[in-house]
Length: 132
Image (cartoon, rainbow, N blue to C red):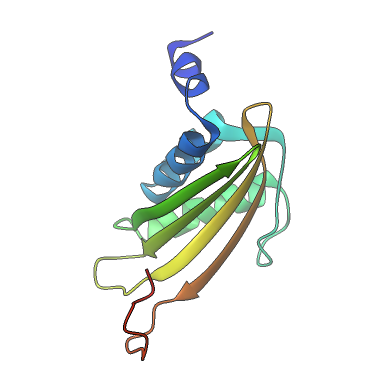
């Protein structure tokens, strides 16, 4: 087992999910896939085919277009093999961003399935509690 495999195998599934998202947000998409994605990976993003490669290529394109993307994890919850991560994602520093929830299903310590839902942060809101 390589040092990299040992370091990721010691992480909880919640830590793996957060690490995956941080790598992707920082533009290290292929590294994120190499470390954490199962060979049988599927996803449910309605804008891309359901396979690993189409989503990876879309993530790489987004990283090229938004090299200053910021991901601020607000909450991560793990129940058995499922992890949910609630984040504030900004494509660039001027962007208000969006509230995004990624739901991961792990199998054998790797991400086997992914769902993502999000809502843009409005410029004005009557809610005094804020979106987070």
